[in-house]
Length: 535
Image (cartoon, rainbow, N blue to C red; front, side):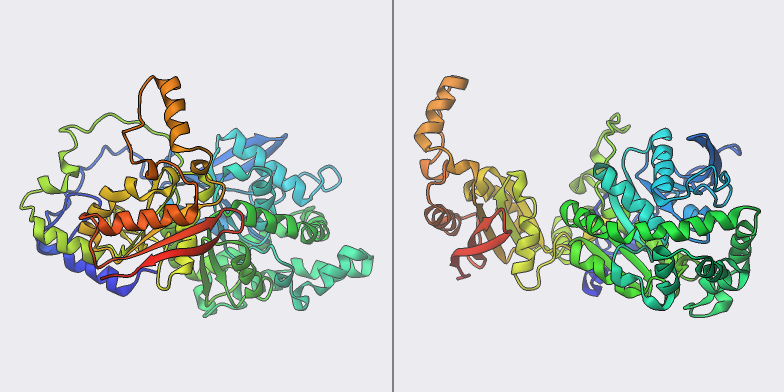
């Protein structure tokens, strides 16, 4: 969530930090000019397209909307629904994202081959969805997992971890504590002993009464739930042969819990950014399943909603807003090079904005952006989590935080309090200009210098690197740098030298605190070596 003091400061400052700067107040901003009406045949961004692809010999139906080159979201539905559960969510995301929602075989509008001819297993459903993503060219995408969508989505993620940009979990389980005996007892027994008597019992899950219960139990107000949803689902369940499809999947659901440890290991190892929007009143997948994700994922936006199993039916607008915010924080994986804009880049230069006021901008910037700590660390990719570890170690620090966007979707600020500065070896000498500029813009309170174990800068001496560079590049660098800043032979010496250098530099304000830490790249722990408090 955005801290109230920060959002208020942005509004009060009247600034757009991602576009042309403002001056005194929001009222002074030039109104955004509306685009000219386009030709009648132009297709709106939110238009949903209803497609069918031939996948492994089956007709697989999928809903699709949004620009093909936008960040992608694959929506994976649950039982007893289909892609229709996303009918309102898709247009709410399609202006900024490429959204795809397939129906699995035996669900919705997709083919339903007889259970005797097609193995209705979660491995098979995941294989079909995987093939569909490859066929339509999805190479990077976030997944929305609900109910059955979770075992399908995690099979995709563990097979192709490099493709998953993030996970949105809405009552999609990956933990044994998320399978309470109250609902799951007959199914757990059926997994072990699929007798005709138990089968007759679980066939009760396929009645209209139970389908209706899936939607209504846990809802704040049953009047918020459209009957169209559960009646449409029941129409599919009542199709000839569909009972055999669902019974097969009920039995095969027992293949999922043994895979939970592997899915959890995937989360711990790959750390996909995660948004949890969970109906906390769900008796099928209760909040205990949602809580499990907090153990394994560090970058998690966790939300328990006062609704039930099909949370979109009651909280669709809230979930859409959370997804837009979450997706906006993910790195845009598209590699796009575009021509320079007409008129050049002047409109992106704050100081060239009409009526620009430097002093007013300076004051507003400090109010709108809460950066207070600069962390200087090494460019070694093994150190990528250093700012997060520092944020955990220092009280009140936030990293990476959340981006803040204005009504037009432009990035106007953030909630992070830490500003990373990356250089060779994490040496202070290379960060001096950044510290001066950072203090001017943000008003720094702390500077944290981090050197790390097994750093490349510990593998050579000043004389050794000068000699090698002379041979390789033909240049003499022996006098280009202070030899104490070039290599690291002792962490205590190097950190004390860096802290001394910063304290003596006129570009570093005397009122900041300076800390020197060693970071263990394997345990991800910090050891404080030196500190120099504000004077």
